Image 1: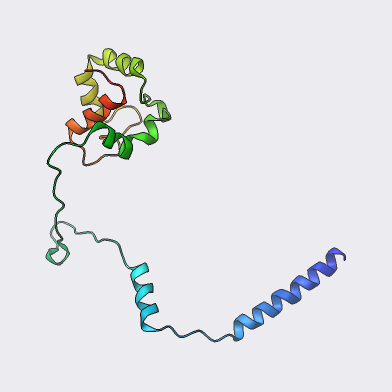
Image 2: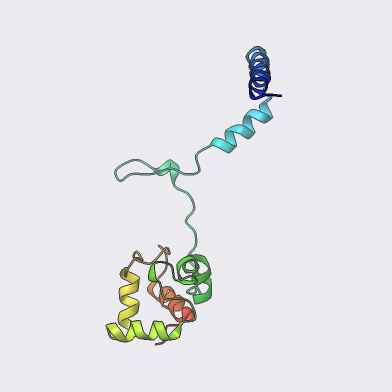
Length: 148
C-alpha cells in the first residue's frame, strides 16, 4: 500500500469514528456515580482570610507531638531530596568532614544551625519543614553528620 492509500483509510476510519461519537447518546448517571464524581472533584481545603467569618471552616487542631521528632524522621520526610544527592551544593548525609568544615567556617555548630534554620545558600528557611522546631532541625543536622 502506498502512503496515499494509508491516508485514505485513516480518513475513512476517523470519519466513521467521528460519526459514531456525534450520534452517540450520553449514558445517564445514577446517584451513586454522581456522588463518586462529586467526591473526586471536591475541593480538598479552603482559605480563610483575616477578617472573614470562618467559624464554619474551623476543624480539629492536630495535637502537637509530645516529644521532638528524631533527626532520622525529619531527614527522611523533609531533607533527603537535597541532602542525599548534594543537590544545589547541599552537604550530603554522612559527609561529616563537609559538615564540620561548614560549621568551622561560620563559628561552630550553633551558628551553622541558626543560619541553616533561617535559610542558607539555596535552602529556604527551615528547608522544607515548615513546622520543625529548631531542636528538630538540629536533630536532622546531627543525623546527617553535623557535629556539636
